[in-house]
Length: 138
Image 1 (cartoon, rainbow, N blue to C red):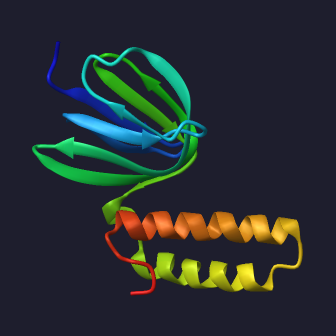
Image 2: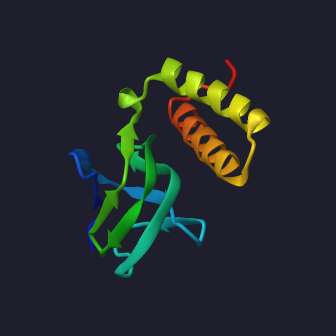
Image 3: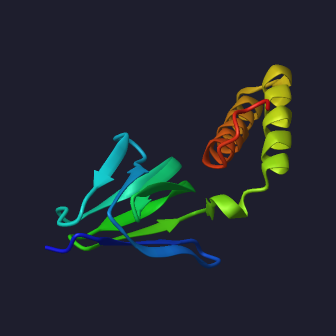
């Protein structure tokens, strides 16, 4: 059994990430986070919104992910994401501005649709800020 697992994250537009990692975690749509080590049982599952955490060369790293599907095998994980970013792709100022806008929209929401859209926007901005290591509001 290999000591590494190949992680590949793809969006419809491009490959976001590809590397050999020691371990990883990703959010599922309905079952919390899955932790994956080399030799994992094969599975396919829906991916939720959140952070993909992986360990490479003894250090933890993060990627954002916003829905999609994951295919897991004993030596690979392929995540086909609706959207995803590496930390260096995140514009922190833009994410913070989106957080402020979403919070204002939550206060001013006039219907369930407005409220749902504001909550999704707020969640996405907070995920981006968390990935970038920037606490919201700072």
